[in-house]
Image (cartoon, rainbow, N blue to C red; front, side):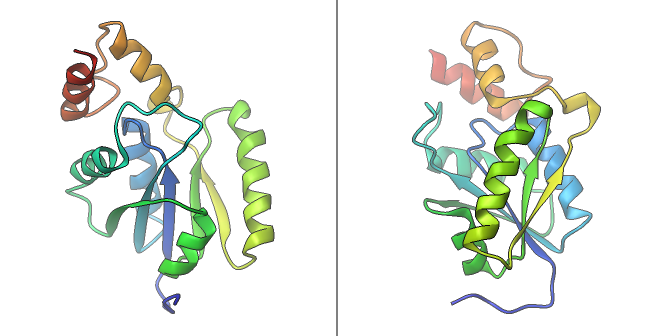
Length: 164
């Protein structure tokens, strides 16, 4: 049963494989707009994850541990169903470039058809994180490159350990 609330709650779904400073930047921006953010770590069968859902939840919890109003959970299913379950009226999505827009726009309109009372809010990361993608960071780490400026230290260490 969905919770009713006057508070402004949103969800921020993603695979977060791994969590980057770009993700953290978007969470901070979203916290200025919403009272509570549910970070939904999802299983995406189309991607080849470096970490399990449980590991990604753990890494995300660690990355946002100092932020108030943030809950991190794993979820498998439709994002709008999770939003209904939590009583959230907004889905946060990050847009980095025009290449993201087509997919995100299509997903937002489809979600609206499934659940008319949940809206998608698009946020852009800061210029310093605009180009970051988890896929690119995994490629750099896999080739022994320095990823310390893209992800928290504990994430970089786990990626390096995974490649050994």
